[in-house]
Image 1: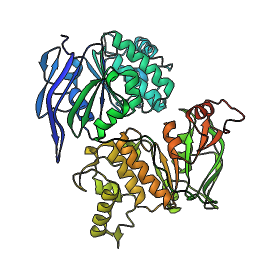
Image 2: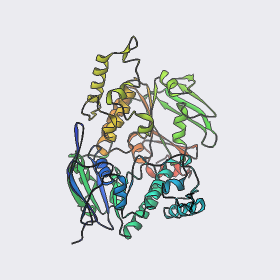
Image 3: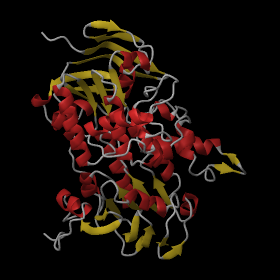
Image 4: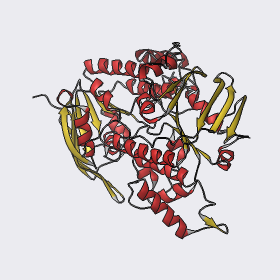
Length: 505
């Protein structure tokens, strides 16, 4: 019988107030892609961090080719041929692509100076492997999020690892880029490299994986061949319940006739041009587009986070000036950013501090926090949004991605907004948490709030939104109603392919 390339036995890891992993087993064979799935908080990230040498377990063992090993730090894991690509990223944005691919491993001459030409050549060879056509001398900060993710993968490949761990590798990349990645992983599998693949996008698991292991609440549930299961069975193992993929609909006739938000001729040189759109009271308006479409920059310009060259904003018919998110709040309009950890949360602060930070005036009296009001409102938010936390003082860094996303929403709710612009509402979270967030947002529009959703998941937009605006290269390429929208039509418009009767049955 074939011996596992990599194996964990009885891994247990605890953090203050929570057991993250409880007696977890996992194994990986050479030439295999083994998926690791589970809801947010299931323990996947903790297990990955133990495999990568970031954390040491309280108990349990790790074996490589049958030999028991001990990882005291990340270098130990690397020395045993394990390369990890994290969801959060590990690139230095002020360094070049080449320097990031070979950090502390650049070729040097006898005097210790880096051989720039040789470094550029070596980096170019790795980039060619993943078909990423960028200059190795480009600074990482000038790359798109998708390009940065692919550079992360190039960095891991450059290590000539025998084991590759990928944590949500397709969150920030397009379908075409995902297919390039999948082909690359298949080539690596053919070279007997073992790959551990973590993703919330279950359809990817069935496209790329050989086996799948399910974790739930820090415990091992099962390992099964991908040919012997299906998405519904996986979801049941992950959540303990059956779950449909259709999102519950909001109440009929909730959409008003007048526009809550209207933008006219928004332009930013080289990014988007003459974009006009409106969202009616109580409507869920979706904005779709591929990487480079300008959709993210558009909403950031709306809130004054990025500068625009021209354009007008009308809120409930009144022309307003918005130069910063603080200006937007004056008109009861709020923004949930796509990168919640970098822009939406204070990761080293606790649950309570994050929730109240958006509206300190509401929680204060005579310049002092009203502790009673804070406690009551935060408890209410935790209960109504089903936020899983040990206490109001638990640090956000110890919460799952789904619960972190709920914290951002709780902060927005504390501001009593009339318009909410939400960028990637379910990015990197599991199916159970997605359903809960959809339900929360539906309740909001039922109460009259207007919601604008930007998402890279077309299925999400089709199921969730009343109407869709599609961008292509900074222009509005089309509009689709809920009854006629499908993935093919969105992709046509997002690719700049215009069809006269696209929005007709």
